Length: 126
Image 1 (cartoon, rainbow, N blue to C red):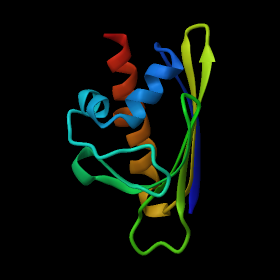
Image 2 (image 1 turned 60 degrees about the horizontal axis):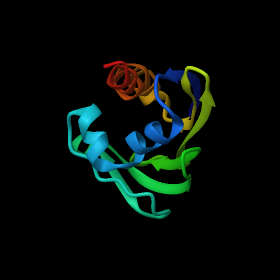
Image 3 (image 1 turned 90 degrees about the vertical axis):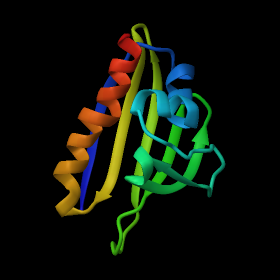
Image 4 (image 1 turned 90 degrees about the horizontal axis):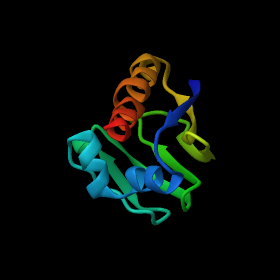
């Protein structure tokens, strides 16, 4: 199991970034795919038409999102924590994803950069 930590800069206020990460209608705008999401702890979520699934653990509005991502057959929970920090240029995002299965690490880290936050950065640049 491996951990991944990275910072991203988004050209939007934390309130807008939080909405883009938690509102299924906005998620669908920047991913181009279906999303099921709610900010209710304990609820399940599904992104990219089911390619990413898990359970919502905790939310602090406009500041923090904690989720468990499902990897079938893994003994330890894979936890994603996204913290939003207001910055003079918009929002500094602190991502921490722990307990990524070794076989999935490369595709997960590339996915964060290219698809997840890559798409979100492009979404706010337009």
